[in-house]
Length: 224
Image (cartoon, rainbow, N blue to C red; front, top):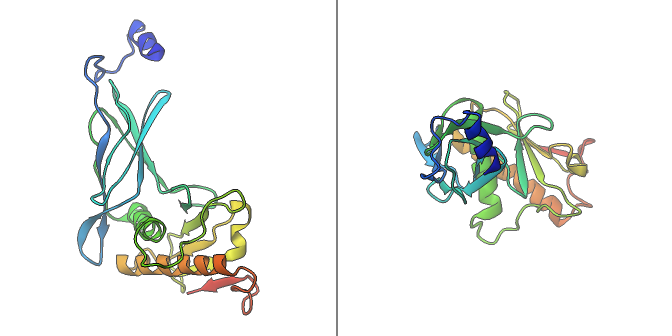
């Protein structure tokens, strides 16, 4: 309120500001599925809306729809990161994959089609499935805790002879990316399946870290 009043006094309030009309940030997040040839919802994605020092957020549901947990009287800056408490999709060594959305006072709907956004969202769909959806009694991947950091997945936007790799030792202190996913040119089904496969390695490592993965590879990495 103090910031808004200061802007009003100095004639710097945005044209869209209306003290009597509040609005709630909301919208739908979709990604293009190259296997199904349709846009599909991105579940479990956290979307944020920020105005000055106030930030509200919402989580997408089964339909990809989100509604933030607060209202604004003026335009807000939308954004999202492909990250949840237990895992993070990375674009670079220490950089979280993210999208800076528009500044507006109405819904932000996004259909991620082509490029890195589609690659990130497809990897996120598979990862959030393994962590939060029904996996028919399978063991969950490593969770974030005091002794164990987030599971980091690096989206390698490049071609490679391997579709993905898992390196258990790379998870030390949360600096490295335990999982790397390659070949964004692959069909969505293949990227999704590769991500599930590599996360399964992480789950197996969690079950028995002492005997997992280091017998035949000097780097303790599994390549698939």
